[in-house]
Image (cartoon, rainbow, N blue to C red):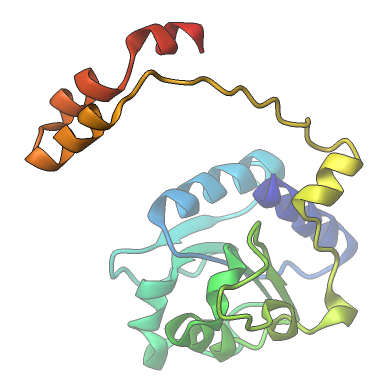
Length: 195
């Protein structure tokens, strides 16, 4: 959802401007990068723009859209130009406050910096929103309660299924059982059927 939303936003921005921007999409996992390339190609069209992926130590190519891993760009900070990209999109933006991630994002001075995350709160209570321009540039932070109240998510249905475990079975776990032994001992396959 987040990636397709930002791809549509970028498409709209491109349509409104006469100049074709260079876009950098940053993520911390190769799988996310590859899924994001596909999403952008689906939204923007394959023949309309050039796309490249940069991970595993490769160098960023001179394409309209570069999908790069933080680790690869961090290893090449000395080789990168601050003005190389017009738009920078950071997936899983809550990671941006980490030293290596912030070094990569801070290097570029884009016209537009976009942070995407489904985890806006950090355990260290550092403010992710301020890194991306503060409240003025903030589009929204929608949590689970908001999504449930506004019918964006279905309310969960909870089922409580009780097992007939006893302390003897639990004590046997400490005797170094294999995973298959634990499965046979604790997990009742009739419950699998009920679920």
